[in-house]
Structures are given as structure tokens and as C-alpha cells.
Length: 182
Ligand SMILES: Cc1cc2nc3c(=O)[nH]c(=O)nc-3n(C[C@H](O)[C@H](O)[C@H](O)COP(=O)(O)O)c2cc1C
Image 1 (cartoon, protein in one colour):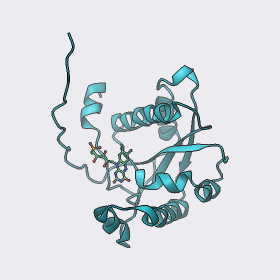
Image 2: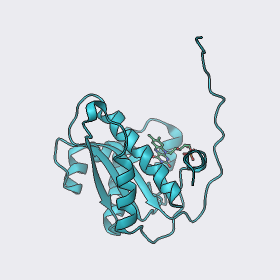
Image 3: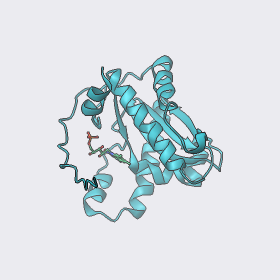
């Protein structure tokens, strides 16, 4: 797949087949992720791969409860309060991209790595979705403890990965607003 094709075809996938991608496939996605640029070439990204079903469900449950404590949007609260709503959509794998420590630009660095990972997954026929709902919990002391992460790490991008059962239709983009200064 050409790069531009992947850029245009990538979708946030919310419906997955149960089989998890194997080590080699996830390794290739992570290898693509670390090709991202990083400020002062610090390469602060670290990766956590979760495929254990019980752990995925536990993180999903805890993160949902955590988010409900602070979520102010009525619409999002309604989603979170639905007992059938699994914040990872029962995806078979989660790749968490975290920075090794807090410092300027690590959010940008890890976000660029995340985009590489999502595009590489699309290239391989896999679906992904960044799950912002899980971020606050994963950044908390409780979340880090559950995953055994060092306290200094800054979780940035929880990305679910798997083979799509169904592909969502594209979300049309707004026309870019550009001020040309020639
Ligand atoms: C930072 C970030 C957080 C997101 N959090 C969630 C989330 O918690 N749950 C979800 O279903 N989608 C989440 N998404 C996916 C967006 O909803 C999705 O990218 C957007 O609707 C556009 O659709 P597309 O990616 O298919 O083009 C998130 C995306 C980003 C970039």
C-alpha cells in the first residue's frame, strides 16, 4: 500500500475479530513507530503490549470507572455508563506508547510514533484506534501499578490493534482552512 493510500484509508476501528496479532506483526508495527522523528533525537517512547484477555478487560473496566469520575460531557457519560460499553471494543491487543520520563516534547514525540504505528497497521490490513478514554487512568499511580510501569513514565497513546471485523465509513474532513502568505 502506498503511504498516501494508508493515510486516506486509515480509520478508527471499533469492531474486531478475536485473534490477536502475533509477536512479529506487533514487532513490525513498533519498528515503524520508532522511525518517527523526536525532538533532539531523544526517542523517549517505550511500549507496552497487552494481549492477555483478563488484563485487557481489567484495564478497560478500571479506566472506564476512572473516567466516569471526571467526565463532564453528558453524551460521553451516557456511553461510559452503559454496562455493555467496553472502552477497548473487545480488541485483542493494546499497545501503550509511553514516554520514559516527562519533559518538553515527549507528548509530540510519542504521538508521532503513534501515528506511524497506526499507518503501518493499516498497511498490514489491521485496524487501530487511539483510546483517549484510557489515558487518565493509565497515567495515574493505580494504572501504572497495574501494568507494572515505572512511576516516571508518562503514558501517552493507548492504541488498540486487531483485525477489523468491519471497517467504518470515512469521516469526511472539513475543508482545511489555510492562510497563504506569499
Ligand atoms: C487523541 C485521540 C483520542 C481518541 N480517543 C478515542 C476514544 O477514547 N474512543 C474512541 O472510540 N475513539 C477515540 N479516538 C478516535 C477518534 O474518535 C477518531 O479518530 C475520529 O472520530 C475520526 O475518525 P477516523 O480516525 O476514522 O478518521 C481518539 C482519537 C484521538 C486522536
